[in-house]
Length: 157
Image (cartoon, rainbow, N blue to C red; front, side, top):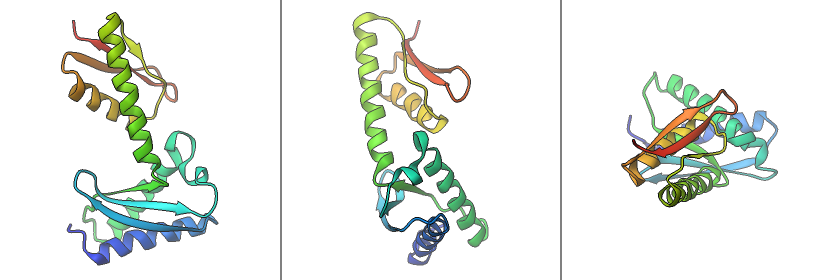
C-alpha cells in the first residue's frame, strides 16, 4: 500500500493513542528513508526507557501492536514502517555494526570464534546479515536458549 498522508496520519495517531493510554506524553515525527522505509520516531516527555524496555522489547511489542491495528484499519493492506524511540534503534544498529566489525577483526587476528552477548531475535537477524555482508568467508550461528540466546561468529571451515 502506498504511504499516503492519510496512512501516515493513521500510524501517528494510532501510536500516540496507545502511548497516551500508557500514561506517557510524547510526540511522533515521521520520515521516509530510502533504505528503511517509513520511520516514526517517538520523543517522550519523560523517561524513554518506559517505551524502549529491556533490550528494546517494549518498543518491539509496541511496533507489533501498531502494525496490527494499522493493518486492520487498512483492510489488511501491508504498510511497511518502523517505530523508534529517541533514535534507539538507529543507535543500537550502529553499536551492533561496530560489535560485529570488532568481532570479525578479532577472528581475523586470532582465528578463534567469537560469541557475542545475548540479544533478542531481531538483533540476531541483523548480526547474521552483517556477518554475511562484511565477511563472506565467515559464518554466524545462534546458540543457547532464550533469553540468553547469542550469536557465535567463526571462519568457515
